[in-house]
Length: 579
Image 1 (cartoon, rainbow, N blue to C red):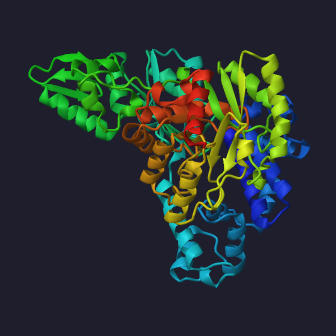
Image 2 (cartoon, rainbow, N blue to C red):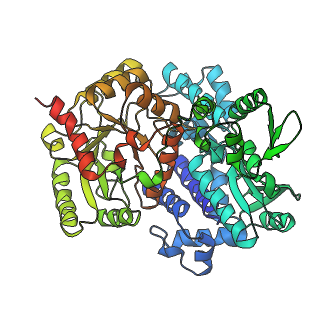
């Protein structure tokens, strides 16, 4: 499918229009179309061939014509004309934390800045401070933003890499006779960002498999083509490497190419002490060269006296020692999740109705779903007033009356204001079974200010869960300046849960922080999707992967509990703190 490619083109048009200063509704139309196409389960190419593009919500006649033009010719005349007015290099500037389309336009119009290199030079010469609204602080903020984006160059989000890899694997399975097929590398370990996508296979017909691989519909360029390894570049600029190995050494190759490097180094050091040599072909006795195994990955660990180590844990963070002592935790699994505790409906800035969300959750086998719309302090997200919350309650109650198979929990994602108070009165919060609260503005405040805001929010007896606790956006924005240890202490002392937000650009808390929260502070966590559309409900697996990388079990995660157990724990905080 070329959905991602087309979504990127539409998103580019939207950004250029915003830089140009076009009507915000027109800009929004392109942004939403990109988001819909990116998450659409069917091939946009096939829909275009069948004349069904306008069946996608938000795709009107004009957008459909542009998509069809691109699929037919490889370009869009409107975009060509737009880039004559606005240099498309400015798009890269908008990706810098602290630089949006408006600032990019100002930098271009006033200083002629088009590239990141030119912006860096202007910062070194302190020329930004001469612009209206700029000062030393804003200049320093942009400099830090450039540092952030440079660190992330070439790495894509797990949430984008995983579906692409799965599509490739599915197409290979359809068209070739395969004995074994798996992702490898950082993707198999479910790291939050991925470099290249690695796929490993064993087959009786490697030549046919490689021929199929280089002819896949997403291939833009063939980088290398051989019988044991081929590499391609997709239209989105992603490199995918396919290796084919003999079936008898598939397990050892999978272990080797999964990594991490640090895990493998320590594993091999231990193997040497025990008289074994490990490589991608198998595990061998050093004294006589006898090959002891390698067809299955489990062979490697079993022969060394270890439990098999889940890929998500292979980062040399104590997993080898735990495997030797047979004390690896039983990690939380997607099947353990009973419900999603952070979903937005079209009552606020979500794109779908409560009925649609509940039906989708039911199909996923959930027992409950929490509708947590934004609240009045976040007007940009159509946050709900107390009166609107009351109106929404009628719709939720009606569903629960007629659908005992899944329960809708009434909730909100409240806004933590600049003074740490919550943007709804206590009497409104007291009526809600689930209250999630998060910081959505002022993330660049000082450590002291962020700490004060969070501390006050934690002490609110009605706030049960803190959403995206550090506020980071991967590759775009660093975590806020808040003191993480203090955040954990406040959560521990107030019996407040912390969220692992499953949005690809958030995955917040990150793995090492979630592990610390659980192991050191005994804090309970929830895994939530923060969905604003139905497709995003599927992001739960990313949150579960993050929890597995944090060594978390189902007992550490609140939304593995049945509804009554969950509500009992959530209400405990109110019983403790309400006087």
